[in-house]
Image 1: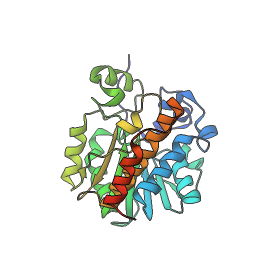
Image 2: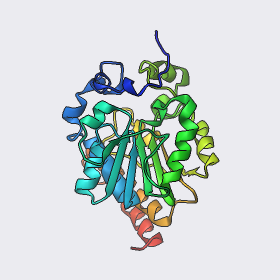
Image 3: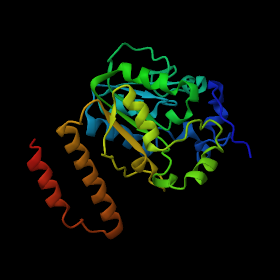
Length: 265
């Protein structure tokens, strides 16, 4: 079985996005479904609702469905970058451009939120520290970074060996590590991980987006952001409970009232 790594941008061509190379897109036609995906729309929604950014950059945005939604529906100035020429040629919004995480063509502190979804693990191993430093450069020190990626030992990747074997079926999965490995690199440039997670209604069957995420800040997250995440997660819990029982969840209204008391307004 081939488990070698790759560092070539041309690996992310049309065949990759059509699921012909062992990529995660194998279950659907990416371009045909990207704008209709509830998951991509929810990612845009949670970014806008929980973090309320003015200007967002998504690293490894593909054709840019999240960028499209943020600009069109949530009044957020959002930009996206991807190394795939094919993805950019088929972009879903004009703010999607060709570019690498190691050389971001924006000025210092330009964004108050940097986002990536299953991107960082695809970077060439010898460029990850450079990319993390570059992401830090363009993110405002008062801003937030949100990264979703396979974290070995957590969620659906609890079986570390089995996860490595499975993930390496996609040869572009270059960097596979546990949480602390990633956090140690983020800390080198002054970013620290929060214990908070944002749950998703439209996660995949293994709940990996909700389980395997980093929410990073230079200092503690603000009380406002923490309250918004708590309210968001409360709503997700209500939705799951209602879907399972067809009844409102008991006790959660008390929890929500406590949140409002702590962070009025």
